[in-house]
Length: 299
Image (cartoon, rainbow, N blue to C red; front, top):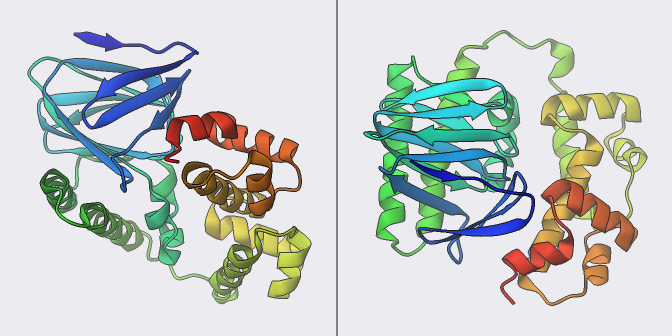
């Protein structure tokens, strides 16, 4: 069995279609140009030590089993099953001789940002193990196989086409989750999605400037305490975490695709100082903005 281990220093390992880059347990997933999705097939006995990354990871065995350790739970994923590991979740995996699997990695922002996905936030934040729902398993595996076929053919717009299958997969998972939780919501809660919708729109349009919880709650017409509670209930993250995510996301794009200075990027993305930007970016992405540009920059 080939064993892959990682130390604390930054390291690169050659994989099909590119590199996987490690720093300690933090993995920086690289993708083919103009894409945010990677798929591997393997029959090689293999072990990968505990790590985490911003991508969603999906394992789909086609023969035998793949063993996953996710946080403190062990999953023995069989050939007719699927395991979906959410972003930034520490996990390790191994596969013995006689087994084979597909492994998919993709950045989930475009799917997770769909407004109705907040109705099923539990399936976005915790592992999904499809092992005893034959109809749902078959539907999900069919969509994943279509995604794999699209990836292999590499036709025009293949990345978007692959994402269309992944989005259908999450729609099926969401429908299944909601069907199991059909309790009516109290009348008082019916307006809460509208509060969050208007707040998200306001944040998305104004995050590049200095805005506060008080600003956004005043915009919605509710107290900051009520707004803060409802926002976190609906989104699964706090107002400050959402605002920080928007700013870090813009900074990532500028680091990759422009030659702007780090200071200019910090100000363009809405950070009040270069020190704050460096601290928040490192906490969010596991490395400094300069190092991130070295890894992912295309300029």
